Structures are given as structure tokens and as C-alpha cells.
Length: 398
Image (tube, rainbow, N blue to C red; front, side, top):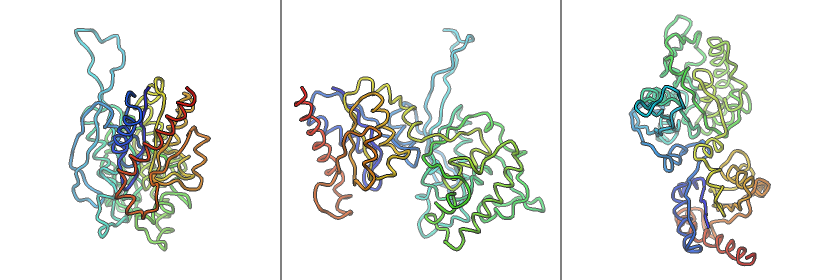
């Protein structure tokens, strides 16, 4: 018997890797002879690079970049070797070098957790460090970059990232502006003459489950700005400044239409910046992660899959880990069960995606703080309960 364990993190309590280890111990208790495959997952948001690098071969690169407020921070991303493209030029005596891919999260350089709460200032925060990570990956020989969006401290439309790549934002007098949201309304010209040419050659797959456009009531400012500290009375002005910014960007890059693209509003508009200034495409985060991990190959010999996330509700059916895993399991006719910190209204939609059953971690009345404190114990007990139910069903059938 083969059991694949493929959960998301339980935010605030357990990482995806911890859930994998705990569920694997439970599986060995209930099915001692089973082979267990652990695949910690993420949906393209914060923690995606870490989850992937826990499984993929490669190395972690560490470098110092500018954080959201310009102060130095230590960023980390993964470098993974990939097979070379077949070529008639390759011989046993002269093999072609392997190419590399980079896997990174924008939150590693421009994330909200990098800024102490008392110092947060979205109007003077930017994504410059994310641009520095991209350039570093190219300098290391990476020829494809996978970039997870989520957990951003910024709402700069990718202005800082573009500046790191060589773009210059100038006022009406031709003077360069600080690439932060507070300068957006003063932009007269976007100078791309110094843009690093490598960024037009290296493909970037942007991993995100966010479909919001850049502007308007469903855009980056109105939907995500308040959680980053934009006061309600300044949302309209900020959205207008973002509109002026993208007007200038599209004038400099007339062949690109960016503002209405699904996902352009992700990570404070970084999605738009990537589409404008780099060779990027925005893809489903979970589908990209599953593809990188060759998840379907693991399902070919699997008898059971356990997935999970901290909170299951109606949003879980839209681009999240559990729905993505379940849909692949449904295609391969593999039973898929989910562990959950809590099961809320709307979670039943997951049955349509292929979830066979859901098990909450908490089996008694306790406070949220207590549940988080007891997360490891609760997760193990829930996994054992779930697997014993599965085993009982198998015994009846067999």
C-alpha cells in the first residue's frame, strides 16, 4: 500500500512539512507496512519556495537585498538543476551543461513579515528586493524563474522591482523619482533604456491564485490595500495614482496590455509589474507546484492521498491546495481525504472536486490559542482517526 501525504501549511500553527511528518507517523501506526510519500505543498503564496525545495533536488541561495523599506534583509531562494534540451551538438565527450531553474517567493524579499508592525508604511515600501533576487538568479545561470506571489508588504505595482531591473521613473523635469507609491502621481516618463536585456529573455512563471485586476473595486488597492495599512479615506487617491502609474508604463511599453490582465493586482500589483517589465505569465499556483513535483506520477501507484489546510471553507475550492490535489486524485481515481484545522460553511463544495472526506483536527471544545498550542498532538490524533476509518472501510470491502 502506498500513501501520499500532500498538505498545505496550517497557517499560524504547522508548516506543510510538519503536517507531512505528523501524518506519516500516524500512517505508520495504522498501516505499518505502507510506503509513505511526503509532498509538502503550497499554492503559490508565501512559503511556496520552501515547500518545493523540501522535495526537489537543489540548493538554497542566500543573499542580501533591499527590504520593503529599503533596509537590508536576508533573502533565500532555491536553485534546481534541470535536464538539458536534447541537441545534436551534445556528445558523450562533450555533454551540454545542465540548465538551472530558480524557485522564489516575493515575500522572501518584499514580504509583510519583514517589516515590524510599528514601522509599516505602504506608501514608502517597494519590491526592489524582489527585482534583486530575479537578477541574482539570472547571474547564477538560471534560465527559468518560478516566482510565488503572496504575503507582500507593498502596493507599488512592481515599481520597485522594475527599478532594480533598470527602469527609471522620471518627473516632468526629467529627474528620477524614488520608486515607491508616494511618487506614482508625479511620474511623467518611464525610461526603459537601461532595463536589463536578460529579463526579456528569461521566462518567469508567476505562481498565484489571485485573479484580481490591477485597478478598481476588485483591484490591488481596494481589496488588499487596507490589510497593508492604507486608510479607507486614501484608497480612492491611491487607486488613481496606480492608474496614472500604469498609464505611464503602458505608454513606454505600447505592445503590452496589463491593467486588465487576471492576476495583475496580485501582491500589491506586482503581477502587473512582472507582466510589463519581464517575460512573465501568471499561472495557477497550485497547478504549477503540482507540475514541478510531478504529482501525477506519484498518483499512478498511490492507494490513498491525505491533504489538508488550516481552514476549509468556500474559498478552498478556488485555486487552493486541497481543491487542486483532490481534482488530480479524482482524475486518477485515488481516494483523497483532508485534515483541517476547522471546517466552515461552503467546504462541502470540495466533494465535487474529489475529496472523499474531511477530518477536523480538534475533537473537543477548546480556545483557538489552546488549539494552536496543541496543534501537533491534535493533528496526529486526527490523522489516526481518519486512517482508522479508512482502514475499517477497506476491511469491510476486502
